[in-house]
Length: 340
Image 1 (cartoon, rainbow, N blue to C red):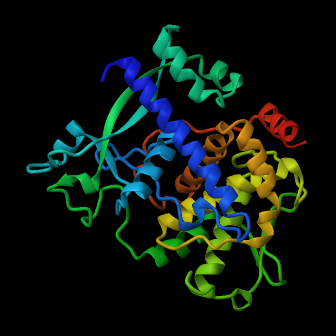
Image 2 (cartoon, rainbow, N blue to C red):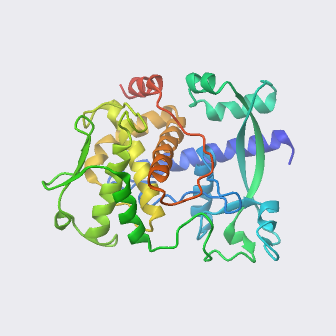
């Protein structure tokens, strides 16, 4: 497949997943069932230890769903061979095309540069100026671990700690340093006083088919911890303060996606909170106009999660350099304009 064909194929993949996610969101309006409520596993390369981000994350997540893959581990044909003797992609398997933005000092406005750049429009001009770098783009075929023979997916990896998921979850929460107050009947984070309020665990319901009240409690707490990272002393997301505001809807989508990723990492499950359904119409309205906002909120959520990983040294320990996403006031203002 030559470069123009790769660009066309990648473009069609992005268009397809955009349509799929929007359709799922619309179909789930009546019962508040969103595509991320089943969890979002991080797309991870077990050879390099790095995570796939941006649109690649979306593509690989969708590929896992479409093909019923049991893991979200991906690598190129040659990378899998480097995992050890006998590790190789099975004959006849088809890869998934991903695109990487590679920083460089000089700008080359060729077709590849122009076509690729539009998928990174949500990177602010301020970020580009601070980095003093442009990007060029490369396309690679990656294969899921389920498409590989000779690779033991159950073996411990170098990048994770060998303790139980629940013990790791409690350790993770404690090491965030977040002030968590117990009591009352509402779960929320207050940015003014900088603490998380959580009802006692006994107040949480065990949702039939989803799990225990304990899992419901921790799913809610992880959602609030994502909000907690938005404080100016942490990740500095300034999306407004009032529940129900259009600008705050942006922050709620960040927390929804971030909570879904974290609960999946700890092998628990997100619990849909019906009070957040109030934001659904604004989410759909914005994404119908500009789906790149979904990718942007996903990247802001991942930036928050990587900040938490670094602060806690929990999951994974060997964090490779990642391109963090910073807050853009102009993008939030444009979000509000699209909603109004």
